[in-house]
Amino acid sequence: MAEDTPNTNCMCLSGEPYAMCCRRFHSGTPEAATAEQLMRSRYSAFVLLDGPYLLRTWHPDKAPANLDLDPDLQWRRLDIVSISRGGPLDVQGTVEFKAWFRHGSERGTHHEVSRFVRENGRWFYLDGEVLA
Image (cartoon, rainbow, N blue to C red):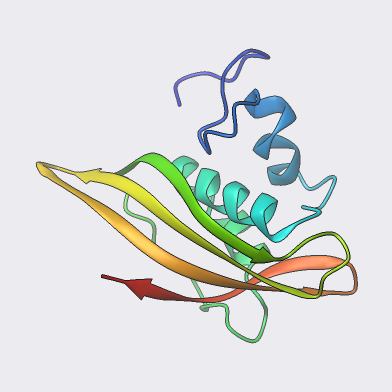
């Protein structure tokens, strides 16, 4: 995303401006209220190469020691396939998604079912199952 103006659409394709959508989570307040919000904000963080946010929202028991993001990998589109639980009153949830990418001349899709847990009122990405 080249510039962040009040009318710039969020890269998670929620239909909301970035400032009202994922940017507020990236800046740290408020925390995502649902697993889907966290999933969308993590996708946007991948687009923006925001490794610190990704590590901050990864469950501490599952997070890698470091994260090496490829600046040549361009995330193009996010499709939410299904959501199971993960609401404001739940403690776990799953989000199935497809993320479309371009890497050089290669184009592809990352299809995953991500698991999320909420601890002390805060959602974390736990892990995911990559689907064919």
